Image 1 (tube, rainbow over the protein chains, first blue to last red):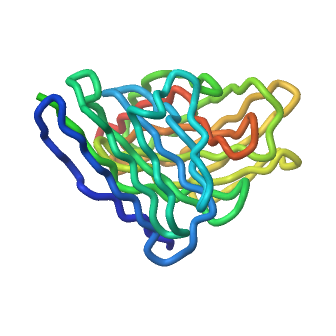
Image 2: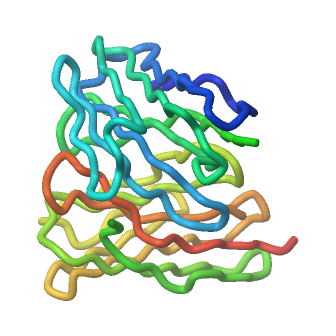
Length: 115
Length: 110
């Protein structure tokens, strides 16, 4: 099956630093990538939808300048958490798919801890 | 925002029993999908049911869809300890915005 690679798996950083998370589709071209945030024992909250070559569509309440998304190619999307603060600590998961309405392939997630 | 609600929030059963989880959603859909998540991991796609389908099977999984009630159910038959995970339904209310329900945490006791 299709594989989505997400790195890093976990990161600990100091407050005020920026963290970049990569999401790669290894064996398929992803027309769309989704970024989610998940708190313990809760569901996935959609942060933004990213289409290759165009600006990401952010969900209401998600700060564009805080969570920078770049989808430069059909196989790579990055999420940068800028000037991270403790409240940004969370589990971030990316997913990708080939076609509209198709199933999603998920990365393994990134646990971010901001001290 | 999330698209739907799932119930129960948590379900604990014995190995060999069947597990049924329900999902309700709010808007019209093209399809509804079910995913599984092991703790601290990404999600794995289980099954997709289109809006013009009423029931679908895949191994020990059975999914139903009632578009008039905007609800779906996932049945896992003959459960195993390895089925312990969280299960989520997902839809796209606005096209190109896959949203997940609250999820059901299933525990299967050996």
